[in-house]
Length: 317
Length: 213
Image 1 (cartoon, one colour):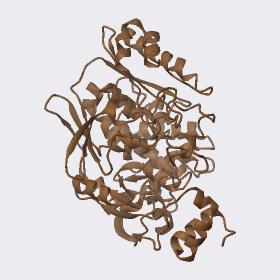
Image 2 (cartoon, helix red, strand yellow):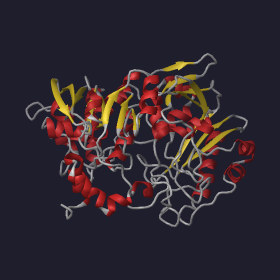
Image 3 (spheres, rainbow over the protein chains, first blue to last red):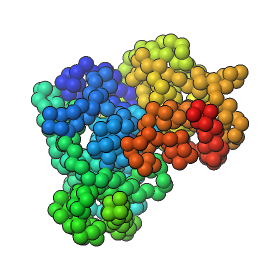
Image 4 (spheres, each protein chain N blue to C red):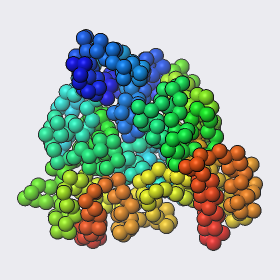
């Protein structure tokens, strides 16, 4: 691990100002992904700003009947909150599908959104990777790509976003709230928060340098039955090959977002109008334009079947 | 020095600065990765204090020291094991303020004032924790390397179920979880046992859960 200096932040605004003005600075909260990457020298911050003392660890009702989740609420605590379990079950289930008990106890809401891809070529510093070293090329294209993206990818990058939580937040139309070095707050719709790789796969989110996430807001509950179906190589503690976050109403309408298929949680609102027609119709629109590799072509039919399984559960519930 | 393996050169360069920096700059591997120039001196060590197994401990540590290394290398509590050092195996599991975490994926300096419990704090050879006794009774190990992490995790799992924390296998998220085999197996998935003692670990946990109920 590279040497770094360390400080504990006093306020979100100061943390943002320090991060914006200190070369090589990064925030650290749970640290479960950052320290993993620092040990491999994939991340080499020269200064760490520990934000764990800043609060932002509560889940509160908003004025319009939704929930505001503090940036530092731990994944376990968010999944266990009874309001989330009752009204936003897709979020609770997605969180519980991710990582292990130990990691969920430490990982935070904001950190989960900001975790990096688990593409094996991003992790192997002997390989070219446009995300790790812009302009060096992508060894995943033409390489071992079974886990990687089937849609929204580019000639520069075919990595996926690894989060389960973010897929549920996309289905729920969550908003990411931030503060910048000047103390200005802004709200970023989750749909705009993560970016597609294009030719700048190293730029993964809409955040400006130093911009600090203070929380995530959920709109008021939309009812329906909530599902998070995760297909993976072992029954627990593995990243998704494909995951389906869905909220399905009695009349067959609803929302669907996919994980494990793209550089960001994958949702196409226009595809959801086909939900009463069944999984095949939805999947055809949701994954129209997919460009899978030889290794991961199975993900396209797998996503359709996982969605069909969820829709059958909703019909028979 | 130029014959040393790459990693060794990097570490010496970090600590020594000066001439070592020249060696690194001349190394084709280091140049190819376009790394930032080395700092001449490592940052000053950071003082911290926390409670380990009921005892207040004061340390002054390099910022890079993980909680795991602080426990093993500085406090010589070697019951907590280093397996993968990347949060994948669970051998380093300890309890911080009663909650289980991977001690390899957290910096010691992030635990100022925290209350840490390791396997040494759960029980002693003369006074085993009920979970330790159950692991012995049910042969919940073979080589034993993952065992301290398994036991710390198992103790925390029963606590989590008791507190009503749900898991992925819940049929109904709003119901209280129960101490079933499938619940315990799902919650123990972050602890890997290469000897494959899983079924015996599950039996040990079921016994302790039964005694509690």
